[in-house]
Amino acid sequence: MGLVLCLFGALAFGLLACVSKIAERRGCAASGLVESAFGWAAVLMLLGTGAFHTAFHMPAKAVTIAVVFGICAALAYFAFQTSIRTGKVTVAWLTMNLSTGVPAAVSIWAYKEKLTAIKLIAFALGLLSVLCLFWGQRVEVKQTVKVGAQKE
Amino acid sequence: MWFLLMFIILLTNGMSAFGLKVIVGWGLPGKVKFPYLSIWYAAGFASIFLPMIFTGVRVRRREFFWGAIVAALSIAGQIAMAVALDSHVPGHIVFPVAVGGSIIVVALVGHYFFNEPMNRFTATGVSLGLLAVVLLGISAK
Image (cartoon, rainbow over all chains, first blue to last red; front, top):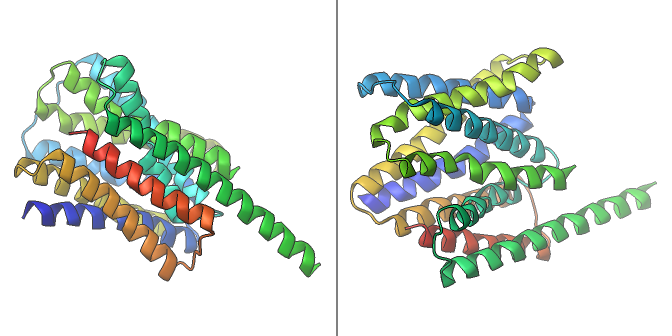
């Protein structure tokens, strides 16, 4: 059952990226889509807070953290939605997921977490991946320009 | 422009989830997650709302509709992962399967439905990135 739920999670997150691409192709404005998605999610989470009878008391410092990182999330999704207009949805989605390396690195510094061999390999692969993706995009832009020039 | 957008995603998206780790580090109860996420989403909503007012962009019916689907899928994915973790599936299985699986879903749909071919550099980057994300997930147990 647990593994089925994991696969369901994978499908839900994967479809989220695919739906974003469909929305882009249907002419949705990036800012409008982000606004709508965050608005709906805020309402659903508020309903969840009420349904689970969770008290809304939070220390001011936790509210500050929520506001700062919420803005980060909206900015990230806006950048993702804007990038898939010209770039590939797979690359943008991979970049979204590769970004988990940043808090992992911050944790090592801030919480003095151990830099294990697996983490080190993951960081190296992540860096190589980003370089390959950027190089791939450069090659594609060059090819597009070349094809455009030949047509003219 | 594309490179700048990728850089923004790399810097902001991963850090956006870091707040939960910070509040866990402060020893706040797990129940605080619901109000925390409510404020988290509301802050994201407000941060886009203000520039929209100044630029005159409005949420039309299509954005309202597709945004609802995006929000539902996001919350469904989060709940599936949370329930999997609650049913004693270890984190080093949940995170790589959910995250790595989502990348495979997007790569397949991108290739077969959105007609997005990849050159060898991009294909290598996606393969290496998938491996990196899975390893990061395993190390996050």
